[in-house]
Image 1 (cartoon, one colour):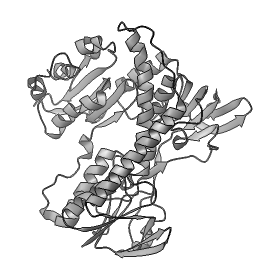
Image 2 (cartoon, rainbow, N blue to C red; image 1 turned 135 degrees about the horizontal axis):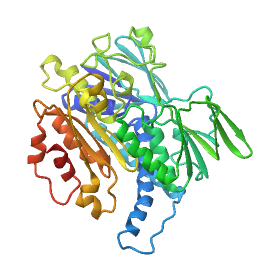
Image 3 (tube, rainbow, N blue to C red; image 1 turned 90 degrees about the horizontal axis):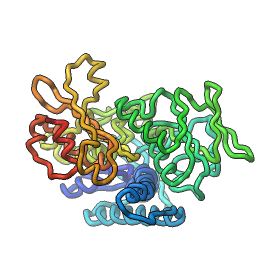
Image 4 (cartoon, helix red, strand yellow; image 1 turned 60 degrees about the vertical axis):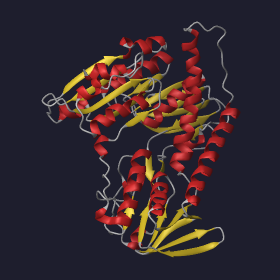
Length: 451
């Protein structure tokens, strides 16, 4: 059996290595970077910059903990070099693992010629592969609206800012979703003035209003200007900088503008129409619970599948596709439960959530029990001189089963795993309490919220 994968991001990599371990011949086609462009050109660089910004912000906390003469300056060239080193190390690691499993990696643009034939355009010419099964895992790319005149100098797309050539004096960020707020955090930490254009009445419009309010409060405390209820419609560059015009007549002025308004799937040029693979109006490839497209032997995973655009989800999809390709219905794997996948936003404070949201429960008319504990009540948070945020846990009042939760605060991206495990395993709130977290730790707030 030959398994051909187009796209070497998290889903493709995991599918390739897992299928190879199960004894299948695997060909992985990647045109950009082994590890995925969205991962290694967006996610990893942004988190590296956020880590630098977090280190700068930590200096303020350290000053309040008895350490004197605290100061720090960001060197963008060092940051740029560090990001390049990290990406290189991760790509080499991915390539080494694939090679150790006997996966053939082909550099080029892959496409379907017909349902069972994959062609690759490489630097040295075209190649074709007969395929018993195909996985499409080509990911996504940042969306750039027509009105945004990206020049990569004053008006930037997200990939132009990891990091930019120089620190903006005043950055106007368009888009208040996950990517937008992370950019606000990192550049305000670096010392730039920041204006955020928010098309709705809260940042992170898909998140819990209390969570959004906590982040907005932190932004305002940093001096960030919020344009709420304003939708950007055009950009203008002048000698004095950049102006972003909004539909309500307001104008945001800055030295630079950054466009962070979501992503679009990489479904063009894959030969999907020729092969008979169904694509929806937005360019995503619909799949069933096995990640099969309308053609049973053709699968789609990761961002292209239109499910949650999370690397963790893509990894699980990739592994399950490999299981199904090799073992079919005999595989004993679990299918991804998209409703219980945890997610995190690496702002400061961090934000993480999982499972049922409070607002969604109320919209459904569902009875829930909500308990909330502020980190101000945590001895560990007080010791660390950072008591921002809270833990919120949602349970079924009749059974005590954990349905979901949100965390705002330091290490939220790590702590959410406890609630995610409870949601996935249908554990009771009492199970979290009885786990007896170490004292003093931030995890104690989870037990207190569950009690």
